[in-house]
Image 1 (spheres, rainbow, N blue to C red):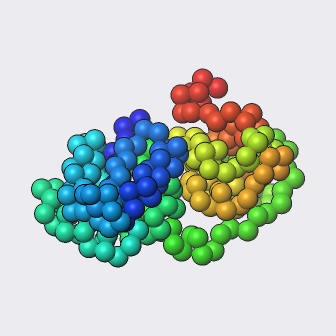
Image 2 (image 1 turned 90 degrees about the vertical axis):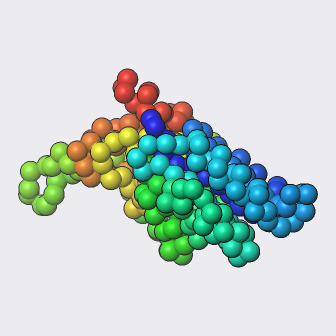
Length: 252
C-alpha cells in the first residue's frame, strides 16, 4: 500500500517530540515521522532550522497525487514557527498544519495515513479529534452469535450490504492502542463502514475510548459491499488475538 502522508511533530521539548513519533509509529509502521523538538542547542523552545529540516525530509519521503506532510505542534509559539516555515517552503500546498490535540491527532491520523489516504483526508481526521474526544460513544451490550446478514426492515429480504456479528476479545490488552490500530487498518481494507459497539471502526481513539478488555464481548456491524467479509475477518482477528494484516486477509 502506497503511503502518501508523512508527519512532522513539533514540540518545545525534544524528548516529547521524539516520544510522540515513537508512539505513533507503533500504530502506523510504514508512515514516516520527523521530530523537531527543542532548540538547536538542546534547550526547551523551538527552532526554525529544526522544523524546516524536518519538513523537507518529510516531503522527500512521500510523492504522488494527494501526498504531503501533516505538521502537529504542542504550544502556540511552536505554531508560529511552523507557519513561518510553511510560508517559506517551496511546496506550501503540500504542507498542512493542523491545530489539534498533539498525541491523539498523531495517533489517529497516522493510522489513516497507513491506509494510503490523501493529505486532505488525513488532515480532516486529525482536525476532527477535539469534538470526538468530547463525546466518546457509549458502550452497547450485545449478545449476538456468529456473523449474520441483517435485513433492512422488518419482513424485508436480507441485504448483502449489511452484516453484524459478535466477538469475544482475546488480546490480553483488550482493544487498546496497537490492537485498535490493527483493527482500523484491517477494517480499512474492506469496502464497508464498520462500527464496534456503536463506535466508529475507523477511529483508533473511539475504539480505545470504549475501554474493551480481554474476555469482553463486542458487537460488530458493517454496511457496504464487503460487509459480510469485513465482519467475518474482524471477528476472527479479535478472537484470535493475532492482528491480521491486509495480506493475511487475502488468504482467508
